[in-house]
Length: 340
Image (tube, rainbow, N blue to C red; front, top):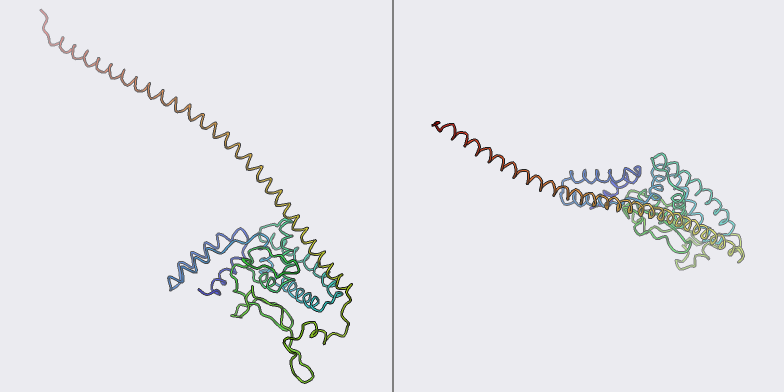
């Protein structure tokens, strides 16, 4: 079963309002099962459609950006490309400026996601908004995460610590359905053709090939920093600038961790409230069950008494009917006997 065929069905489903996903998924699976010429392939595709997971609310909000405001995600992706280039070049000044740009861009993107979610009938909480921002931040840190976000089929939120590659396992509904197209401008784009790089395997954007004076490419094994140094006219940033850049990244990571802790605390409070509510409901249901069992016990006793009384009255009625028959027979006998 081709991935593209499933992706063609999944894409529109993940662009729907949150409350409509399950019903539309069921209808799509039934439609697939009812059509097609190859029965085996049709059943397999219908089963795959039925198994498409429902996204988290935060992932759905990001999918709304992909469906209704793709330019916003494109800006996030391009900013991430510039940040990674500055990081590779150890350009502390550029990193500071880009970090500020990222804060502004992510703030605007989250506001857009909130507005789109409300338009689609689902207001998102601050905790969910924090998860949306965390996911978009991950998209600036890793091109694979950027491709997953732009796919429009995101299932869960993403996170980046600035060191490891973003974990994309189980993050996209149809992995590999939207290959990453890389351009010389460094833009990571999702395409519908049969490209070779899937969402999970996305790499940083290709750089234009450079040649030396003799027209030869630099050796592949040449260190990356030396190759970059040939085109830079400014000296390598001093250690203090590198330390400041690292500090900035650490502070942003700490801020993201604080936001995650806040979200977890909010989830904990919600869980506590649910536990209290369900405990109260359980006690009320037990009280009503005890009352119902007591009433049932009384009803059974009344039923037994009524059954015994009905049996007694039935016997008494039967005896009275027999007496009436005997009395009638006696009257007949007396009426047929002549008087002396």
